[in-house]
Amino acid sequence: MLKKVPASLKRWVMTLLVLGLLVWCAADIDWSTFRFFSWGTFRGTMANLMKPDWAAFYNGSTEDIFSLMLMTVAIGFFGTAIGTVLAIPFVLLSSRNLWKNPVIPRVGKFVTDVLRAFPELVYAIIFIKVVGPGPFAGVLAIGVHQIGMLGKLFTEEMERMDETAVEACHAVGANGIQTMFFARIPQLMPIYASLVLNHFEIAVRSASTLGLVGAGGIGATLIFAIQACRWPRVSIILLTVIVTVFLLDALTGWIRKKLR
Image 1 (cartoon, rainbow, N blue to C red):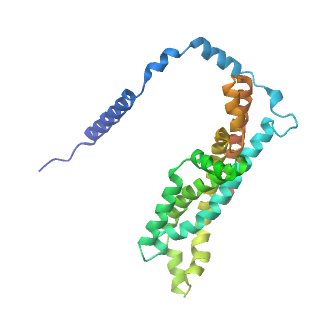
Image 2 (image 1 turned 30 degrees about the vertical axis):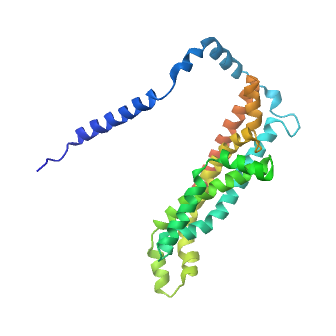
């Protein structure tokens, strides 16, 4: 009879496996591009990034950094709103504890898997071909991706919720719709709200890059500034994104505390 494997041996085996995986991945990377690295260029770039172009932040036009950042936040907000609303039907379809037939939840989960399999940039390129370049394409791209992401998270919370309140409602003669509104939704709403707020932050960060393909927001200005080596302008854009994400994190954190 084999003795139980010691925990220390398990840790060593896992460590060796991880190190082996890192070595294998590193061996597959072309490291020859390091010969183009220049410390002088690096120091010059960093020095220019330390000199933000404050005049570009706000000048009263619709193309300044402040206005483009507001557009980026708006794209993230409306995309998250669309994804939240349209994720609900998929949650009702995908939750195993709402169906006796196991096939229906599998179909619903497969659909959400497909929707979140592609990044927002892929969706943005597709929607630009459909509706044309601009913020609307970005909103649709984030919205479709968020359907898959929020649909998965909402379904997981629905399936592992405490069924005690549901059973109590059934015991007094409540039907499925009544148990949904009086037992499930009150229990899940704070969790769902927290997930939506968290994904709103993620959507704003994603919207910051969608402009790279013409889907509105601050991304296009950023890539043009990088290509032109206008590092002071790049600096003010990055600072604006950082401050915006920080403020959104503080705001959504405060809201989440109030929902507990």
